[in-house]
Image (cartoon, rainbow, N blue to C red; front, side, top):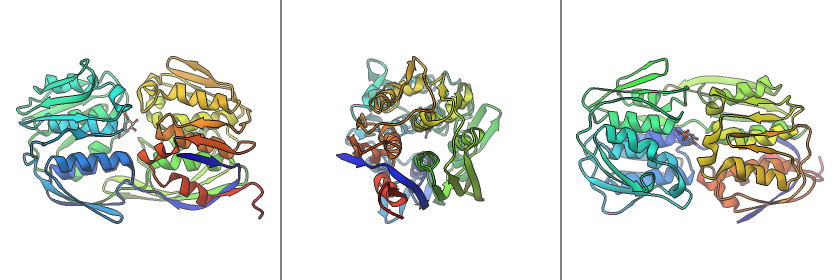
Length: 432
Ligand code: S3P
């Protein structure tokens, strides 16, 4: 599908977003192995989280999809059924990596596969710890999906993550639920902690001491009534749109503000962004609030080290803001971007160049000078949801109509993206 984006006169109004993708995956997986019923309101509408539900159903879990919520009948830690078919993770790295931890705890064989993009993404990062715990995992070329997992009888481990990855941390902690004793993950830098929070909410014993996170195995999890906060990583595109387009003022309501994700807001504020938190409360251990954003001239800056891990999903749209900033943006330590849904350094650089933006790629990042103007162009999503949405944001500031091919990729995390963007943008020439 091709979408045409016209330059925006301003971005305004208020917006609520479907539930956080990271949190939705975790709630659904824990609900499946809990005892009793879990109701998840505002479950993510993205295809990725639908892949998780489909895989859970194939494991014998009853899932009811109602408008605005999902109800899951938990089967208990040991109640999953051997699947009769290959589990389909679709485009979702979270589904395959996190569910692998649960599959490793099952005394049966399962195979989990995904689409073309997922089939190119590295899985050795989960295979290694799961094998140390006693599972047998086979992969294409030892490293890529499909994964064939034969589990059961896991032993607890202490595992130092070689890459900063919340998906891998989650995989090991989920597997740890099936091991007798305490399983510990040590992170190189802090990553999103939704798993730690959700595990506690479902009744598991979790200890966090600095970068060491432990879970006690053989926990009894109990079904719960939960609500996923709006997705801050989806909100990032609308925040960026409002920051970019002069005269904009936008409120995003009911969005997740977990500090391990809200580094985005701190980073933008440090560059001069007019962002205010209007309301803040806690829901099931997760901070949630309303955010006001106004158009701002950003200074630009550097993203490196621990900040890179904290902003990893937002870097494509931050590249757009960087080109419009005073001093530009430098991104380092971001080699992980090359193994996301697309090689995001290459695909973002390609789209920006098509728009006349100068950008220099490095193996682990890029440098985009500031004070640049976006030219209307023919762009591609490269099958990557965040590239589709980041490109649409750039198009709002272009000098004419931009077309984005493969725009349906946005549906992986936010199928409503283009409708919501229409809702909050007024076009140049549309009159006051
Ligand atoms: C996620 C962790 C990150 C992130 C992804 C979601 C999660 O991936 O990029 O979109 O929900 O745990 P990595 O664990 O590969 O860093």
